[in-house]
Image 1 (cartoon, rainbow, N blue to C red):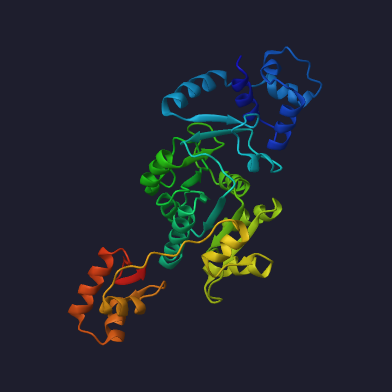
Image 2: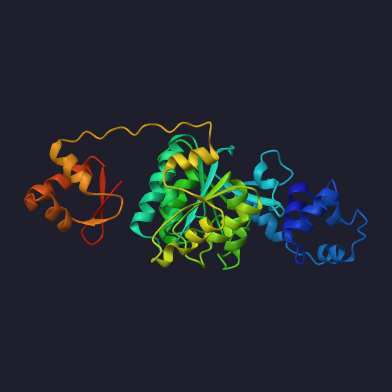
Length: 350
């Protein structure tokens, strides 16, 4: 039996948690002999779990499929296993990885609401893009809302992104993120501890969150309610000694209560990308944004449009300009990628 097969078998033993499985790895130099009966095991529970394991055929078939898919298997004993993740209390002993992105120290987790506002998603995409352009790798969970927006922004930059899944590496969840799932597999990295075909069960996502926090130097929360799963990631970040940061929002909006509470409890308040760099990446220097070439009318309309969505009728009213002229300016600003349209006739800065 190959050692890799033995470690995968150990990762799937019933009745042992990740801490106990890691302890087995540290006690025995080689795992394969345990399953072959060539090593005396004095722990009755471990002996029974090993004796009852019967998934060998499934592992063999899965290894063949993963190889065809171009998926790498990392064990906690490998040099390529992420060092920051290895140092959390209960790291997965096996990871499935698709993508060629190398793990570096400049990593940031961006997490937040699934039912996020357009302003929140726009902000997550902008932060993801700006930091990735500086070489920071953005880590998130490929959920809809803030996660997806942070990944999208990061793919535009050099740092790229890591998507941590709560299911097998052959499953895209949610299905609406199929394009993003495939793009990250090509240009970034998809990562999971779950075997091929494992469904996205509810309890997988809190487990996944420890990987997101463990991989990252800091955790940034954007728009999170009091019951948001993002708070689990943030609290794990605190446990792991990571920088935990949050962007504040309206005290009257439930979608900000979680982030606001984090700040009250000691998370760093973030009101600009410079704050993230100071807290997590002091050796990096924020580049000045390239000024968009605009004429006088475009600059005036652009000044009315902010990072909070605004309806085109309100812009027309505030500008005191003819509707036809404002519409033409909007078209020009969209072509210059200075603004974007939001459903319902609203617009927002990119």
